[in-house]
Amino acid sequence: MKTKMIIKLFALLVFSLLADKINPEPLSHGHNDAAYTQHIKELKTKIPDSSFSVVLVKPFVVVGNEPASMVKYRAEKTVKWAVDKLKADYFENDPCSIIDIWLFDGEKNYRRYTRQIFNDEPTTPFGYFSHQHNALIMNIATGGGTLVHEIVHPFIAADFPDCPAWFNEGLASLYEQSSEKNGKIRGLTNWRLKGLKEKIKDGTLPTFKDLTHTTTFEFYRGCAGGDNYAQARYLCYYLQEKNLLRKFYHEFKSQSKEDPTGYKTLLKVLKIDDIKQFENDWQKWVLKLTFP
Image (tube, rainbow, N blue to C red; front, side, top):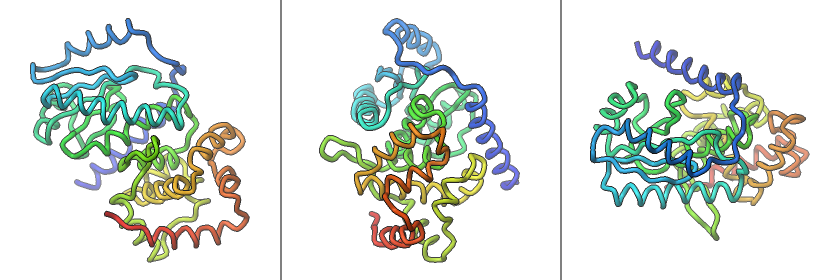
């Protein structure tokens, strides 16, 4: 039964991702105040009770059932902070649509209101993006990491629609544990490090050429234990630590027609000729990292 459920959920994920590629929306450079006002008016008809409050953080609308002061705090200190920092480093275009961020206070509320508002059953205890409802739906009691991760995806969809899954998830995963340094958002080591080290030690980690050449289907199919996520994340982390991540993003984006996988751009940005030697050095570097 569990195997069938996993296959079903995976099929739905792939279909959702492919649907975005098949029917891309035109890029938008923002929405006017009237559009936000109308959107919030319609949104309030979905709010089930008075425990919820609404905060506008363009291009998102944050809705939560924690105390209003806490919803405002999360909207400003997590959502706005992440949006401002990510746009400063990477994104020129806002998401095509106004996106709602629903923050539910604890697992009980998360599951209850997700069923009540969206007629949906969460498959993760943390949160997820619903393409059907154009909303981020979060159990905010688990922390803001998943929220920042999910914020990255709609920006990439608008700013770099040809971005392959490995880099889309690598960049998003980088910021699921993050802080600020010298006014910039920076990813930190996180729980994915343990599994990555195990793959390095047992010699089963794919090459970077293999990773970057995975299709969307192949990338997610190989993620039963999050292995592809971890490798992509810590490649991005390495680029960040070498002050090359922002450069890689913009060069990859501009050269994506000629280099759709990003592999050639990666070699160019790293200025390396011997990828095997680099992979050996990178693995040794990863093994020295610590978390927490």
